[in-house]
Length: 314
Image (cartoon, rainbow, N blue to C red):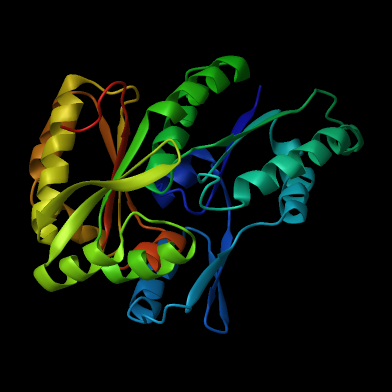
């Protein structure tokens, strides 16, 4: 059985991983002023985007436009129902985007129309589709997608993989250290996000106090505060290394960065994290932060995610 994985472009997976495993990416369109930019997880395009757009701080400057119901339906009926026999569609948390709702609506039409498409192509087997909200975002989505690929390569059935992914969704934790609080305070707050209030923004801007933000089961909020970006990243990386030693639910730690990836190994705490991963059979997947994420959290931000049961980082 040919099993495929579809993600939206907020999913911070490395491009070489996406290409090597045939992960299908649904682009997200960004409106930057009067210009439309497509987020397709192309590293060169993303780096150019960081340089060109992310120094602009107008509160109303950017918005994201998710794939519509019709676009998702077209993607499946023209391509995916022929390329695969079963597809897992993993989306950003439904609390941040309409992609999950659009994919659920599209799935109903896809499952009523695919038979004729496959019959005409001489593909008689049944087609199956599962749409899952990651209940997370950015690097968190990447952990789940990477585990789905691993299970597919091990020969798992759709039922086994679906059951495991639903469990993993509840165990995924994403942490972020922002370099610039402006974007989170201004843009995320417009969407109802209260993870950084005015007081935290004013204090952070004046004293360089950075929150460490945590996303889990659709909820995002601060879990720690540190003085300075480097201190925040070091605390995050060293605590993640300790969590690796205590055991993870999936053998991946995913990191995304809103800047040149060559800078990440130079960040404080990275060597400790890398050593813990190597000694415990955990793969670190490093990716540029998506354009969509970057316009909302600002340039230079670091996100790190893993799946673990019990208490996350302490």
